[in-house]
Length: 135
Image (cartoon, rainbow, N blue to C red; front, side, top):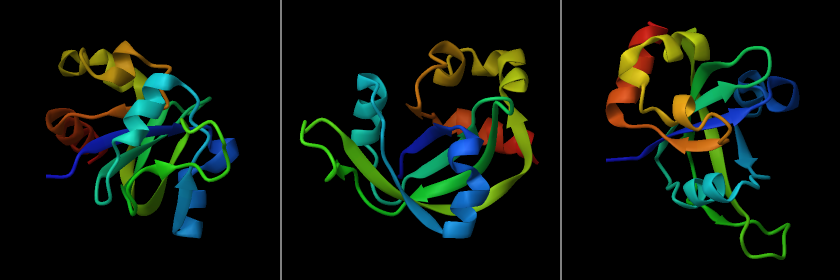
């Protein structure tokens, strides 16, 4: 079974709508060591919740990894990795961070516990719960 992830991005920098327009992109620039380790574990076929940071603070879409993680060719430090992702679909209704935080079933969700991470794993039950909330 494919792993599931949540990737965070400022919509003013690269929104889910930008990904839909471009069809796919290279996810790069992850600096936090923990988030970078998560990105390193992304494999082709994994599903990704696309989360808008900033004023929106909501899961807005689903993407899929279309490559395995690989070293970032633009850096020389050997630590940075990139993954190609493609848009799958926008959620029927964005699922806000406020909604997620208000529900006990998300108490262990990294989005609630370690909210600053830009790349984080999503359990199967968390994935299903977010999809339910999105309609």
